[in-house]
Amino acid sequence: MEGLCLTTSPSGSIIAVGCRGAKILLINPQTMAKMDTLVVKDTGTTPTSALGFEDVPAACTSVCFRPMSRGEGLKSVLVAAMGSKVVHVHAGTGSVLSSVTIPNNEFANVVAVRGDGQMFAAAGSDRSVRVYDEATGTQILELTHGDGFTTGGHSNGVFALAFKPDNPQVLLSGGWDHTLQVWDCRTQRSVRSISGPYLCGESMDIQGGTILTGSWREETPLQLWDFASGRLMTNLSFPPPAATATPGAGAAAKASAPQHAAVDARDSGGGLWGWVHAGVHLCRGSGEQPVFCTYQQAMGVIDTEKSRLLLVACAKQILVLDA
Image 1: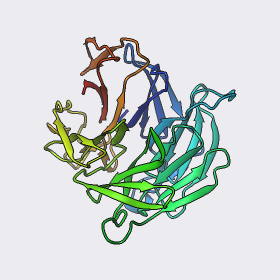
Image 2: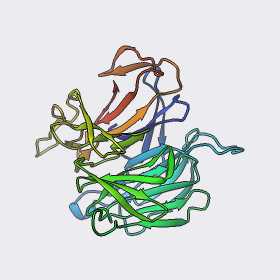
Image 3: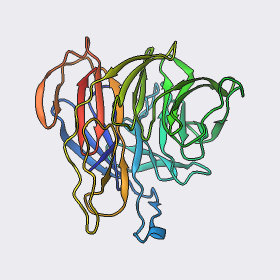
Image 4: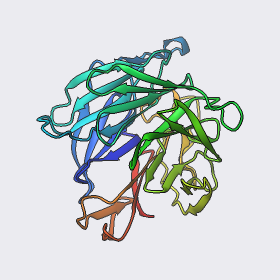
């Protein structure tokens, strides 16, 4: 399976990886062993019949855990973007608890849940960022523009979203237009933009005043940015992923190339060319000392109280780095 996005549970005890075919892979971060594979039903299909292929189950292009509210009885609820829908999935059973269809979007590329669990945001190809009430699934806001002078909103598809953990009214987004937009939900517009990142998947995260981005390009794909100033802090080194693709009949496939955070590849079962996006996530885990693996080899122990872990979903691998 190819990982298109990933997240960690609030306790740091589960890594969830969104994959093609409406699948979510659950992984134990201590051992990197598979815990379960959820096959989500009733998510619709990705329409490809016009290109001569059968329609396929919608890919999971974004996934996050819903924070638990006080008194809530249901634990481990995943919120995922699949096709044109945002679905709430019970991680224990894989059953769909609810779904919301995002208007004007054949693909809801990304979803993010606010830290208090009361709202979620979704975005896709129509360049708008929509904010929903978590309890009812009702749209509350549609964020489309800036002030018309210094900010203008997005000019192309949106693939990454993140609420600022210490300010629930601030929402970040990124996508194909080489910008990060900083939205103020109170004024309902973009108040600032950061130029540079080219995001083609759920490849943005924020902790404190640090933004992490994973761009689709050969050089400097992984970067850390200062939220306050919008300036680039550092370019992170990124090891080349191993080759993951096999050629299909009649065409040569591109294997993962060195230094790519997201590359072209052919699905291992043949079929459409697709982008394999790098999902990125900053985390400290549960405060324990998890053994982590990269390139399927145990590398050692990181003290998560002192180190910042960087998870990267790249094609058929999950890389765990010390940022």
